[in-house]
Length: 166
Image (cartoon, rainbow, N blue to C red; front, top):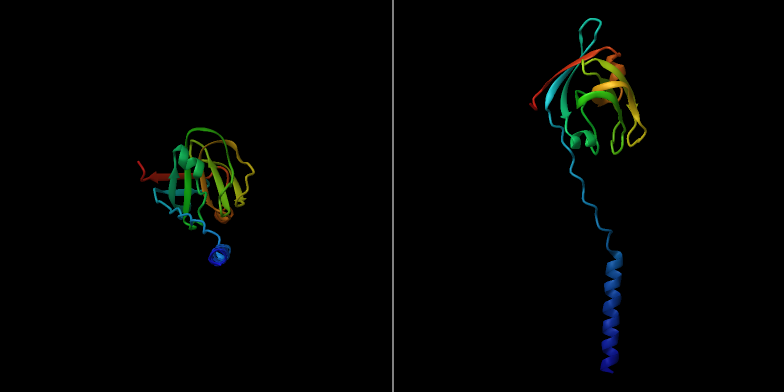
């Protein structure tokens, strides 16, 4: 009799434990910390025709391997007066993609003489298609999608920047 009672208590406790386990929510995934914009300089885009300023931007600079590989990945957005300037050690054809980038961008390819050589407009989030420069570039400026059109930027326009990183 005691044995039977003991088995019932154990069985009852086991079933209760199983019921509690099955009702638990799935473990929550840790929330990724948002990457914050780090102002490392200022950049001006200039119309070649009349040397007028098209845009003044606060820039974050990507000039080492980790920064150039990561870029604007994992960020939710970027203010319109900001951009990310990639600085490479040499001038050569470049190609970017939008893997893990959560918002649309315009990419502006700029040569060693700081002249715009090409751009890729409205690059779509998470798209891993190649976005080539179509000409040798030393710098790549990423800005929010639509700004190239809004600024009426053209091949041959130029940029100047001051880095606070140095």
